[in-house]
Image (tube, rainbow, N blue to C red):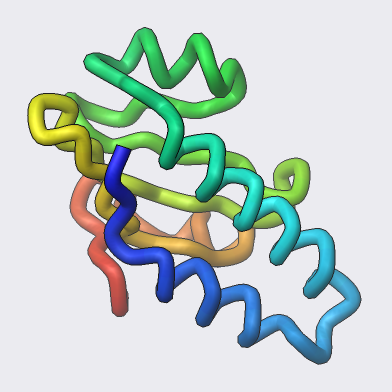
Length: 107
C-alpha cells in the first residue's frame, strides 16, 4: 500500500519529543508504516485480518490503535488504487471529540 503522507506520522511523533510517550509512539508509528506499506489490502476484511483491533468505519475509514489504546490513527483507504490516506492522528481523548467519518488532516 502507498501511504500518504509519512511526514504526518513523523511530525506527530516529533511533537511528542518531550513526552514520556515519544519513543513508544514513534516506534509504534514506524512499525505501522512498514507493515502497511507491505500490505496488499483489497477490502476491509484484509485489514481486520492483519489488525484485529482496527475499527472499520463506513466504506473506507479505518481507526487503528497506536501504543495500546492511548493514541488513534484514522485513515481512508482506496483499495482499488492501493492508497492509504492519513486523515487524523491524536490522543484517545481528542479522538472522542471528532467525527471519524468526516475528519481530515489538520482538523
